[in-house]
Length: 259
Image 1 (cartoon, helix red, strand yellow):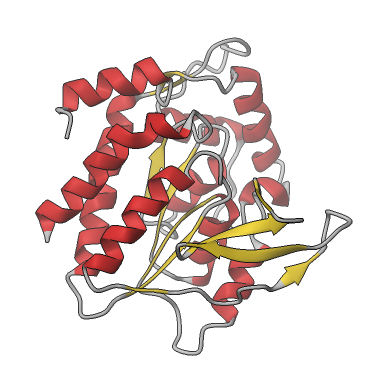
Image 2 (cartoon, one colour; image 1 turned 30 degrees about the vertical axis):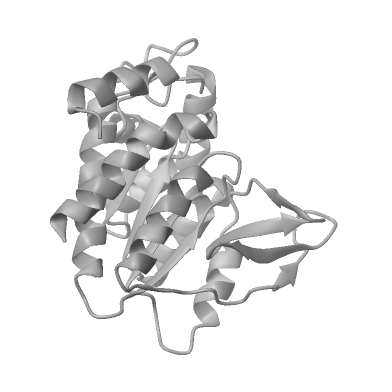
């Protein structure tokens, strides 16, 4: 495992954090859309209080490390690598606490099969090796809402994703996770590890949830602030999969050390 300083350097070099590829304009557009009540940006969550554009920007500066100045309207935006590392460690502690139980029920899902799947796969393997039951509800469930053609839930090594004509696809949708949770006969999982609408729907349902989120996905950070999601790791969610390896090594190692 890299030291904290080495990992920080890697996160900045790979642009998982630091000066990220997600533009300031894109971030602010999403914050405004969430403040204006656009359901797409809530990622399956409802909120207990109104969140203004300025409130969301301030939260994102605090939780993800974007530029706090509302006058910074375009160009480069940032994620604080120390906030990323701190959240990875908090996630590891939460995962270890669940794995310390007898046969915990854990559910994995990702809307980023070309990126974050690289983190989910080793973490799922670790959970299975420590006695977790990896849940795979609603496999094959199909829907067409918003797409014009069927998409269905499919699992790869117990990680839920959306399949579209034989290929795993990027999605923000919360509907598949709602279906998965509704298909469970034994109640909510002990832990959901997810992103995008998969995480939002799980947190909204009351399932203990930890998540990964980019700086343009403010809904999950608002969910964390309101206590519906336990931990959100801020990171660029679409860099080359191999770049996530050092971060994944830290997460897996910290979970193992805590057990």
